[in-house]
Image 1 (cartoon, rainbow, N blue to C red):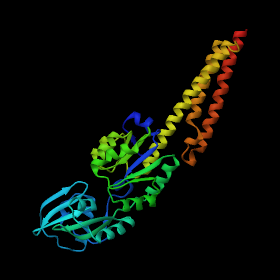
Image 2 (image 1 turned 90 degrees about the vertical axis):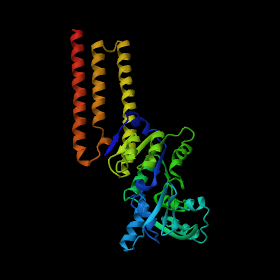
Image 3 (image 1 turned 135 degrees about the vertical axis):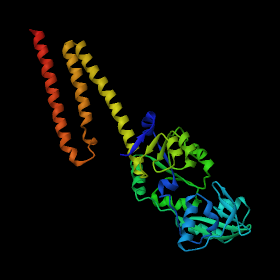
Image 4 (image 1 turned 180 degrees about the vertical axis):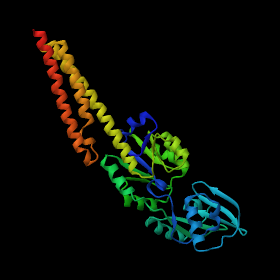
Length: 349
């Protein structure tokens, strides 16, 4: 199953979840973007962002010499800037260009077209003038579509929270069948975005993997961290997936729902068996000894049935084990009532 519940109350809270929020990069996607269109690579050499790595890797693959840079600055959630051969270069999302007052002109249309194809458009500006549009694509994990479908089958609404522009985020959401999209979210805005999703008392679970996801993982009802993510995200989460496979979220939710269902069933049957035994004693249908035998047999048999229930058999080869277990249950019932009946006959004598 590859799921670690770090906190006990997460096991209970997870089955109450109605909305599941998902970070995009590294959670829905591989987190390894690849350059697809024009590059301006020198400024990105110093950046640690996955998109920067994709641009630099593409430049090296094409054997492009990268000039030295100075005054490098990483602007979290926006992009980067640097001095290259005496010119100020800006590379980042359209929000960076808006912030710096740089008009994109026709490049804005090119970027929108790339976004609708599921690519992430970035823009480059030289000395305050838009110069190029860059596109990178982060492949969706092979397991993601099946995981989203399974989450819907469990009755959950799925929301995607992304820093990408709206066109790109909506294209990915349409491909995966995601219910709700919140795009162009800056790292510091994730917590507020989750609070907006959590309305009318709805329970929210957030799944993330990066440093910027840690505050969101700490404030939602249940935080789930991807095991292949950062240590900060893992330490802030209530539940940790041991791999990067999103189907681990499905397993975690299913385990929570089944566990709490079993607990409620156990409480119901324990109370019912005890009530039936007490009713029999009050009506003098059974003696105290037989009442005790009945209650003990009922509770033990219920526990045995719960352990070998067919819906717990996740593999076909366990079918014979379940059948053998059920036979043992009925055998135990017979022995308990025979013993109870023997004691009753002794009392009658």
